[in-house]
Length: 162
Image 1 (cartoon, rainbow, N blue to C red):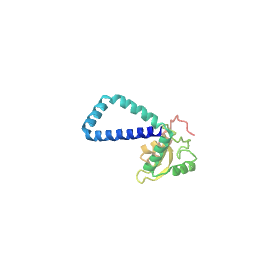
Image 2: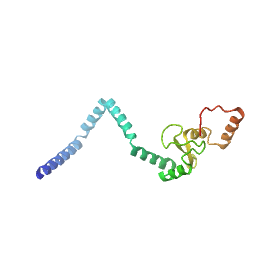
Image 3: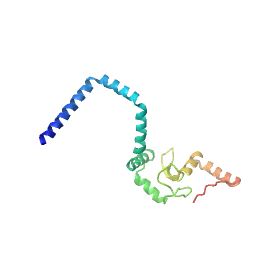
Image 4: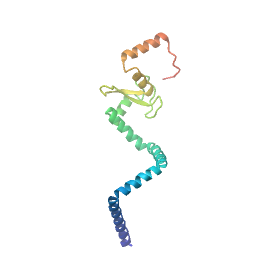
């Protein structure tokens, strides 16, 4: 019984080696076949890849790794640095004080605010506040002028914030 499995493994290895040599000797045929196959199956492959990516991206460990990579690359932060900042701000936006959500695309999702010139992290903001100061050029002068304008002309915000 044991020799059967050894024979099977040896046979598989011999076949694997033969195919490797055949592919090397027939590289142009293999390349042409693959190109033709990809062209004939482009639509089904695109659908498969899209479905796979949608499933893959929803996996918790993939989202966590992506988040950690984003912190490291864009803000030179570790997850511990982020968590310390989160705790220091009590999980609230540094400007409007709404409770932040750790992920997502909604207005209350967390954004890491940083100085675009120096890369220095300033704090955690909700998306709305982060976009707001960005649209106002991160300029205290422009922000003060906008505040004075709203005070003078009146404000009409219907958004209820904490």
